Image 1 (cartoon, rainbow over the protein chains, first blue to last red):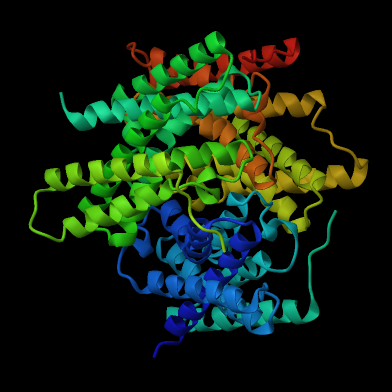
Image 2: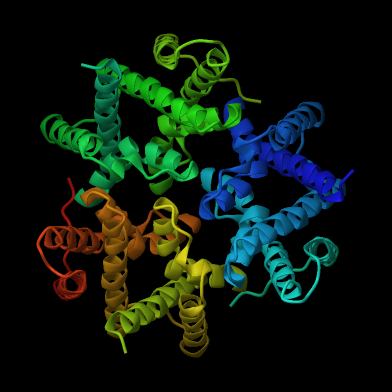
Length: 201
Length: 201
Length: 201
C-alpha cells in the first residue's frame, strides 16, 4: 500500500470531519453541512486544478469523493453520538496535520511538473493544503482561519519552498516528495505541540 | 422556438431581477446593483466554465448578456415604480424555478459531455443553477442562502443525478434533457408549494 | 524603458501597500498581512488568467512577484515607521490610479486578443484592475469597496469599452493601448479630484 495514498485518505476524512463541524456550528441544514464537509476536503484540490487549468481531479474516478463521503458520515455520526465538537482531540489534529502535509506535497508536485516558478509551486501547494478550509470559512462568513492565526499555512509555504529547492538538485522526485512530506508534517506537529503562532505588527 | 432557449431567457431575466433587489437592499450604488444583477444571472455559468476549463459562454455572443441586461432594467424599473421587493410574488418564484431547472440541465449536459463522473456532473449542474446567487450572496457578505435553508440546491443536485442515471441507459441526450428539465422544475415547484426545507442536525 | 512596464511596476507596488494596510487594520498576523499584500497586487491578474484559461502570468518569471514583495516590504516599513495608514496620501492615490489604468489595459488586450466580445473584454479588464482588491476585501469579510462606493471600477469598465470600440477601427493595438491608458488614468484622477461617486437607487 502506498504511503501517499494512505495519508491522502486520512487527510480527506479529517478535513471532511472538520468541515461538518463547521457547518453544524453555523446551524446549517443537512445539505449545507454536507457541502461544507465535501468542500473542506476537496475544495483545495479544485482551486488548484482550476488555477492550473487542469481537469478537476475529483471529477475523474471516485476514490477521493468516497473518502470525503466517509468523512462526512463519520462527522455526523460523531456529532449525533457525542453531541460535541471533537476538533480539539489530538487524533483529529494529527490526522489534519497528515492531510496538510500530504496535500502540500501533491500541490507542489503538480506546480513543479507544470514548470511553474517558486511562487506557482508555493501557491498550488498552499491552496491544495488550505484552500478547502479557507473556502468553507468564506462561505460561512468567517475570515479564513489561515489569515488570522496559527502556524498552519506557513507549514505549506515552507514545505513547498523546501520541495522546490530540493528539486533544483539532481534528486529523484519521489524522494523529494517523501522528504517534503515528513518535513511538513513534523513542522506542523511541532507547531501544535509548542502552540506556535506568527507575530502581529 | 426552442423550449430550452425560451426557458433559459426567462431564467436569466428572473435571476438578474433577484440580483438587483439584493443590491438595492444593501444600499449599493447603481454600478454595484447592476453588477449583482449580471453576476446572479451569469455568474453560475462563469463558475462552471472556469472549473471545466471552457471559454466562458458569456464571453462569446451577446444573447445571454442581453437578457441579463433586460433583467437588470426590469428590476430597477420595478423598484422605481413599486418601491418594494417583489421577489415573493409567485410569478418571480416560478420564473426563478424555470431558471434553476434549465441551468441545472445545461450544466449537467456540459459535465456529462466532458466525460466527468457523477460528482462532476452534479457540481457543474448545481454551480450553473445556484452559483450566481451564491457568488452575489458572498459579495454582499451573506452566507449563501443555498447553505442555510430551503429545498433549492437540492433540486439541482437530484436533477443532475437523475440526468446522469438516465444517460447510462441507451436514450437520446435530448430526451434525457427534457425529462430532467421537467423533473427538476416540478420538484422545485412542489418544494415552493409545500414550503419544503431540509432538516438540521 | 517601456512606459507600460514602469506603470505596471508602480501599480503593483501601490496595490501591495494598500493590501498590507488592509491586513494590519484587521489585526492579521504577519503571514496574513503579506498574503493580503500579494493578493491585492496579483490576485486580479490571477482571476483574469483563470477565467480566460491562461497559465497565471505570475507563475512564470519573477518580475511581478518581486514588485509585489517590494510593495509588501514598503507597506510594513511605512507602518512600522509612521504607525498610521497612509492610503489617503495623494501619492498613494495617484500610484493606485496608475495601477488601475495599466491593469485595465492589460486585461482588455488579453480579452480582445482572445477574440472575446465586449463583455469579455470589460470583465477581464475590470477583474485585472479591481479583482485583487475585491478578493482581499472578501477574505477579510468586507463587502468589496468597488460595489459600495466611489467612481473606481467604473473607470475600468469605461476604459475597457473605449478600448473595444477603438479596436473596431483600423488602428494599431499599441496606440489603442496608450490612448486607453491615459483616458482611464485621467478619468480616475478626475474622479479623485472631484470626489465623484455613483448615485444610489
